[in-house]
Image 1: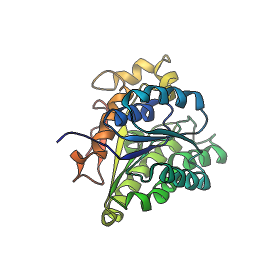
Image 2: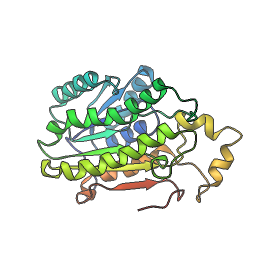
Image 3: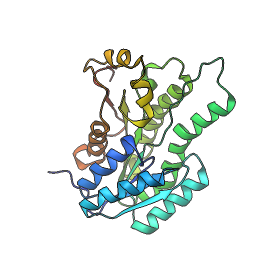
Image 4: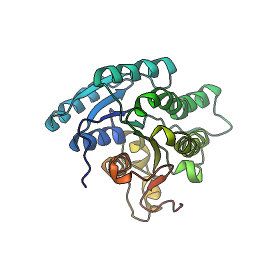
Amino acid sequence: MKIDFTDKVVLITGASRGIGRSAAMLFAEHNANVALNYRHNREAVESLMEELKQFHVNVRSYQADVAREQAVNTMIDEVAADFGRIDVLVNNAGIWREAAITTITDDELAEMIDTNLKSMFYCARAATPFLSKQGGSILNISSTAGQRGEAYHSHYASTKGAVIAFTKSLATELVNEKIRVNCVAPGWVDTDMSADALRSPEGPGYVSLIPMRRAAHPDELAGAIVFLASDWASFITGEVINVNGGAVLCG
């Protein structure tokens, strides 16, 4: 059995860069039709769409702030109308901000919760009726911060811990809808979001705490995502796959 998504439709939020971009490339390489969500970076999405042409699959882009419920509902309806189905939802969109507990503002806290957590609720809720028609899969992107915490990023870590609980809850709730729900928890990944931190004077110290002594490449996260969405993982649901080079060892 090989991994093959022929005729299937994958919707990826936050697809313009980093993990989302790599996941889009790998899904398309395995014959998936891909719906690319982005919030602002139209140029990056257009560049990605050009690269995806080599795989001869159907690719479309959708501008939407997934932290806004109505924007999500409209996007999901448009994807379903354009492609005729949705088979996989990758809840990847997210932000990472530094803030001490004594200085964090209500607006900063709300932005983190809206973008990293509410967006996943909105997308899963809107996509479930379409995923359930033929059976489907939801992949939520969490973080090692959601497992061990992260100083000066308590609002970020809290949302990522909630993503893990959300995943486990939906896995049992949606099993009768023929939908599997799993989670990928990255550690340090060399993306635009983490570039400043990894290249700062403290960067080597962060990497030194990883047993494999390097940050992940986004493609290494894409492999875990595509595997969990595939038939190879047909009996896996409610699972958290850690892709962190050994930085956090937990079940």
